[in-house]
Structures are given as structure tokens and as C-alpha cells.
Length: 245
Image (cartoon, rainbow, N blue to C red; front, top):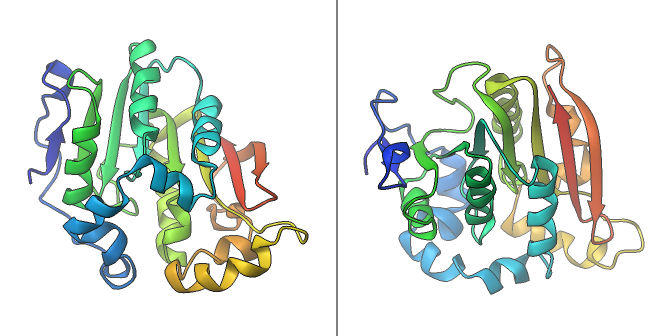
């Protein structure tokens, strides 16, 4: 697949040279997530809206809308989504970008995920798909008005997570925002705090980091970004964090 993948047949999908070639796939993806993202058959299994909703215990729509509403109904300027996501998050995001006459970039390190996302987007979506590592974005500083990360950080080892957050903050403009939706530590009374933890530890070996520590733990000390809004969902199992930059 090309370094940059056009998601539109119109002018917004016509891309120039953006980098020096495909980045290597991080080893943690090959080791821990080959079954969910890397292998082509993974898409055949997991790219089903009902299954994405089931994996999130019936909360996909609620969490998707929480992320989108934190961004706004109409999104002018430039929007960045870091990492593809199963389900219909990105088509809904693209609709809001189109309503604001803006542009949307989606980056992912896996060509197979970018190809899958392209099939989900309308031909005239104001979007372009870029093959990049979230921890080393080949994008200029202060480029985007807003950035969204939807269930990415829990999949990453600590150093990758730290670098991904730093990159998100680097490419967003002063006055912009970063919206994160991901796992969190459930309330003590939530049965999933006790029953889901063993399964999560096996299938998502880095996810429990977000049970132990607040996401702000991995924000660089040198940044001026600060939390301006939070949300908690499904007995605390999921969280939303909005950072103002």
C-alpha cells in the first residue's frame, strides 16, 4: 500500500509525498495484537458494529458520541484521529468534519487497517489516511485544531503511550484540544472490576495500566496542556479526558 492512502475521489483525497517510506510495525502489535489488528483475517472477524459494541459491553454508541460531542457538532479547520478504530466512529467523525467544511486526517501504522477504514468512508469524505506510527508522527508542530484518540492508549506499552500522547500534544495548535476515550478503573461496586480484570490482563496486557494510573501520568511535564473536562461511564470502566492546549 502507498505511504499515504487517499480516502476520497475528490481534491481532498489527492495526496502528495508525505514521508520517507512505511514505518516498521511496532513489535508489541506483532506479539500481542496480531489476532486483533495485524492479521488480515482479524478485520473479517472484528469489523462488525454489533461485535464492537459487545466488546465494550454495549457502550460503543455512548462512548463514540462522548468523543464526538467533546469535539463539536461542526468541525471546521483540521482534525486528526490517531489510529483506526473498528465500528462507525470515523464515518460519524467525517460527517461532522464535512458539516464544518474542514479536513480530517487519520493515521495508523498498519496498512491493513487503513485499507479497511477506506472501505467504510464515503467516496467524498473530506479525509485522508496516513501510514504513520502514533509515537513518531511525521507531521508538523501546531497543525491541527483537535485530535482524538479512541481506545488506543490501553493497547500500548508505557513508553509508546507516553510518546503517543506527547505527539498528539505536539501537533495540536495552541488553543486546540485533545480528546481521549479509553478504559479506566471501575468503581468498587462494579462486578466487572473483579470478573473482567483476569480476561483483560490476558487479552489486553497493557490495559490495566489505565486502571492503576490516571492518563495525566503520561503527559509530558514540559507541556502546558491541562484537563478541562472528564467523563466516567459504565460504573467507571470507561473514561473521557479532554485536554486543552
